[in-house]
Image (cartoon, rainbow, N blue to C red; front, side, top):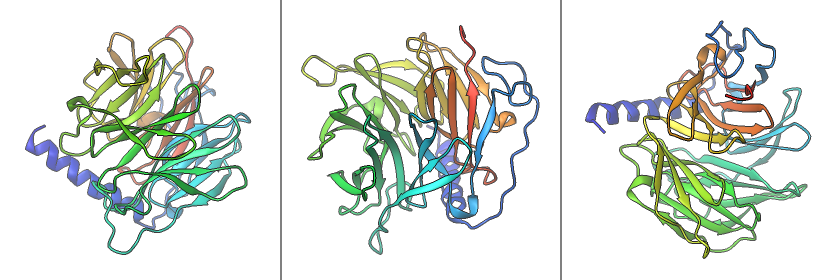
Length: 332
């Protein structure tokens, strides 16, 4: 990465953190007519709609998302240390607020405490990641229905646990560490995580490396924000990591991603560029949503059937953090 890009990204980061903590007013985003794409545009098709405009003054900037059976979504609010449910009608209910870190704690790369990936098991248990720069709080947390949050696995305080995914058996979780360039594996029941994969392809190149993460067809897939790549890491019969395979390039600023359900086709949130890209199995990609469709620095996606739910944190636009639902056109 060039010195210019490194400094630019550092500047954007500083702006994002300052924006996340600022108390500002925001109005609804304006939707403009966009060119036809593989997703219907908000201006031309009612299937693309805002589920919720979130309260920027309350720090409601969604970082990650998981879906619930009834049609609601659970999100993490990155810098307000909150896990919240967004109902189908757009109402927001805070489910948990994580403890404040000790005075003097500094989260690697981001400075402020950071609440990252979230996943849900069949019984409604939520798992999520918290990074504070302190060894007593950084790690994997669990929230059972009706319970209180508890840390079940410690992760290195000098890292940034970011993306989170469950395996099919729901017995193990995989964590993408954006600072240490590592994929950790942790038992769902709690315990000591293991360093499952570490490779140059997962490393940062000036800001953040391994970011989004999903288990898909006997492999762990990871995005790398700095390197602009989508990686596939096979899970061997012994459960260990196979060789890292690069499946897509040219996606700098990629954050989270989600598979559409048709083979290895996926949708990728391109955060700073304010885009969602459709990435095909051969690695080629096309921008299918932009700021004209209501995106405000998209951070994460989740797909159910033919609908993609896109969370926008508005880290750089600092206007309208939101949750958008868009229909995926069959056959594209």
